[in-house]
Image 1 (cartoon, rainbow, N blue to C red):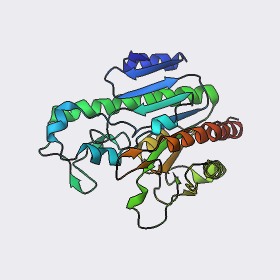
Image 2 (tube, helix red, strand yellow):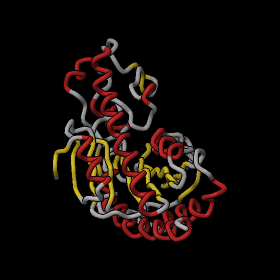
Image 3 (cartoon, helix red, strand yellow):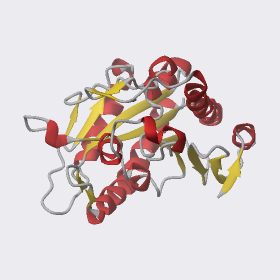
Length: 276
């Protein structure tokens, strides 16, 4: 893996170089093993939290972990194009627009003992801006090369906080063209339901049951590119004890293997249908 500036990463994408890189400010990683008509993202995978903010933060390390999406990058590891956040959403949230990316409060609790300075906020928002510069360059290159693109936007959610039965997989589609992509969305739901999990974990998959796909990552790509579908895909945290902060590696491995099988098939079918 290389440490690269944002401009160097973008130059490599435009030249269709294959590379693994961490941004020079260590805010995100990107790997491109091959140029294919799909990409994977784990924008909430990160857990880093800038040291200068530690003393100001009222949330514990566990409280931050609880709302992040741990191991989502690991689940996507086999795929040729993966971009993943390294910083915690509690510093700045890549799935929110720049004006709302830095929380004042988080899940009903004030986040900061005292307001952040302009300089502190600017440092975080610069990383947010750089991430989206790279996302824009990546999707632009994939659309130019293949005519269309599908992005698998992987998240996880805390299922135990719900007071009803919730699905293992949820697709949020409120902000994509459901008429145009109806069959692609349903095909992805069906393929997710086929992923086999250990410990008698069910593999139910529903659309807009727990979340509707209102994230900025999806909206940014959808609003800026005409031929890219973003599939906001949430997996319930059945792969860990969300209350005890214990990860179940056998379940993470099963999800990774399931996505390795199902995702390229779906992406290939999407390209066949939408590339002409």
